Amino acid sequence: MNGLMLKAFGSAPGEDVGQLNTPGHVSLDDEERIIVADTISERVLLLNKQMMLQRVLVTWHHSDDAAGPHRVHYDSHSGKLLVGLANGQLTSTNFTLEHTSHASRSCLGIFLANYM
Image 1 (cartoon, rainbow, N blue to C red):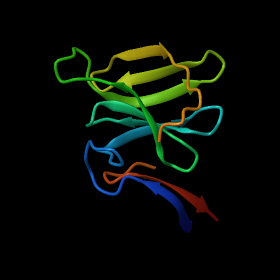
Image 2: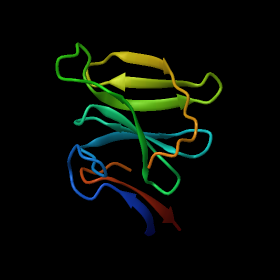
Image 3: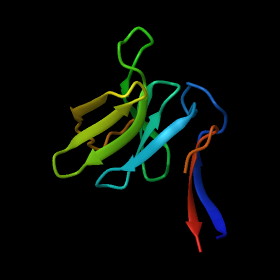
Image 4: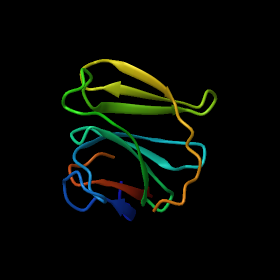
């Protein structure tokens, strides 16, 4: 298969705005926004359809008993975000993923491609 990259987020590994550090998994919400498990940075991000950061949904810290996110799944029926943690635990959180006005896996970022 050949693909054409349409959009990208994350230009260099890191924990700053506009960066990802081993995005382990992605999921879509009802509005096709992208929920990203940024495993090494220990956070879950919400990107809009244009693949721009909308907000950080949740973060973990090294002192927490739980490790960072490994997998994410948004259940549109219940409104819950399920997060599988790197230490094997599963968390379930009710998130309101309302629109806010705030501004395949890769070590550099994620991308949207059109495969023909």
